[in-house]
Image (cartoon, rainbow, N blue to C red; front, top):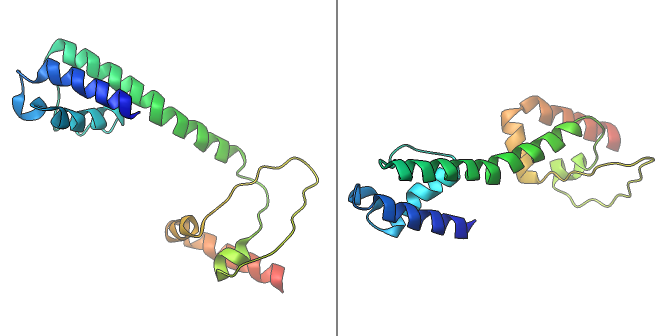
Length: 142
């Protein structure tokens, strides 16, 4: 990833440095544009003006989509597919106590791990989720 960023930044630097010295005057300035383009953020604060610069930037945008957006979409769809089912470990997450449990499944299962930090973020966005987990933990522990 860093190699692609460096190559793209050097190429765009040499294509645009004479046309826009304030934006592409050195490699580090060009790397700002390279990061924004490869990550498909595209702030718009710096844009190429030459036709070849626009063509190279378009290629970098597609490359950025392939490197970041597609893998993220694939991972998200994998989590979506396993959205239903049961869970365990909520008592340990809620109480922050170390737990020791043995879990068995009767058929193939996917195990997903949720950190305390991720749970806290989810709780802020979906307060009802935390209430459901508290109720589940209370039901399981008696």
